[in-house]
Image (cartoon, rainbow, N blue to C red):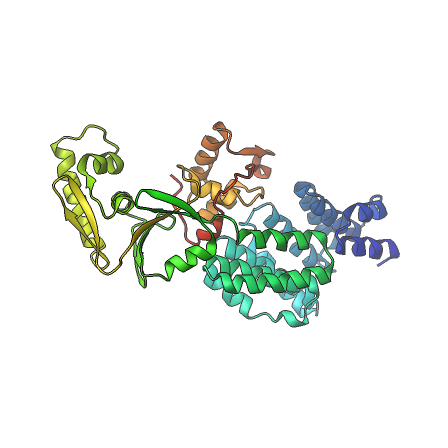
Length: 406
């Protein structure tokens, strides 16, 4: 490797892509192409970056397996940054094995962290945590130690363990400062700000307020009966009843919880559950059937009693009943929750993260774009979707399970 290539690599290591490009912009050999790709990635031109890195991998060929594997890892990182999270995980794993076999343990560890971040992003927390526990960050350089702690913090946040997340972020901050990489330091600071940002809304007795992640964690460990409008569950301490596949029952449970301990008139319940403004006897009969189903579903934690005007929720052991909801709610809130991370997502990546069809995601994106809430750039497979940050909008921290798009 010549001196210009070495100097360019050192510039990229400290987040200086302009200096790197000035050194190798006239070069077209495989190492220069790979470094140019990384430089463009740092500048935000991910499409050009991916093309250059892919060309470098082809140029290295089978005669230089380590360099080719490094290009595969770089392409995977670019794909992750562009939220193309369906990108060939088997290719990344094969590259990691090649790097480990040839003794490049640093880049092999980097490949593992990319896969861990991908698993956490799509909600596979158990697999991500298991993979993370198998790595020892003590022997890694500061940048990878920061990546390790950021991954640990992300998993802890999704598991609502704010104390563990804060400890991991403090270690990540020390490692990022030791690495002296501005973008890494900023990433840690942004992750730290999530702990103080609104993560949910608490609705009780007709009033509502914003909640931080640590307050949500405390609520889940309390004796309160919670109707969780983020995960579509009714929970009390260790009893968790999922109504994700029974939307009518969940709408009824939420309506009863929002007005607890008062009852809800039958016409209000019919309008919310069945979207009928003018109820007749058939709707009232259907309401009685659905209330019977709800009563049976949540009987372990609450009762549903008929009143003169409608129905009321009666907790069995809890002294308080509340609703936990997203900070902002609308039809396609689950899609917006992922876009709220500020990254540019592909529709296929969103479909994978939400575990739904790409066509359903595309319909949601088109609807949101028509309302001016999202925007896209690029065409075909290179098309990406973004949204301007919305103050107080929920992130994916409270979305560990797939939620319905429509």
